[in-house]
Length: 139
Image 1 (cartoon, rainbow, N blue to C red):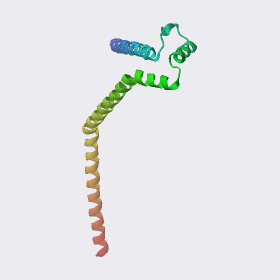
Image 2 (image 1 turned 90 degrees about the vertical axis):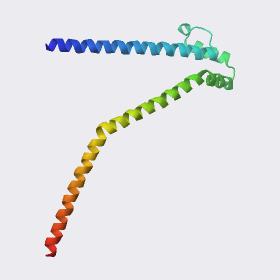
Image 3 (image 1 turned 30 degrees about the vertical axis):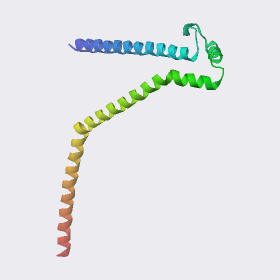
Image 4 (image 1 turned 180 degrees about the vertical axis):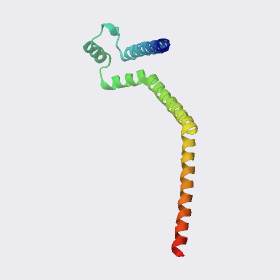
């Protein structure tokens, strides 16, 4: 019985790991394609698999004689990525805010109201006791 539960949990973990690996591979492949596109727009003509860092720098220098040319081409080549990154970050922040609001309403707000009610009740008790003590002292 315990072995069945453990086996089920291990299978679930394996499936989740496979999903994560597939998603990671998909993201890595799209990053590779995008980096090749950007390098192509910057003037690199050979395949990335065949290039060393030195050769890459040499090709970039040959295709972009001035820093101004390189910066302009880099700006154009990465515009879509920067726009997508901005959009994704905006949507993620909105999603995170929405989740935080739901969590606040569901979990935190009732606890805060309970604490507020408890503190208010205790404060009233303290005020009543203080009033009682003043009456005793006055009498």
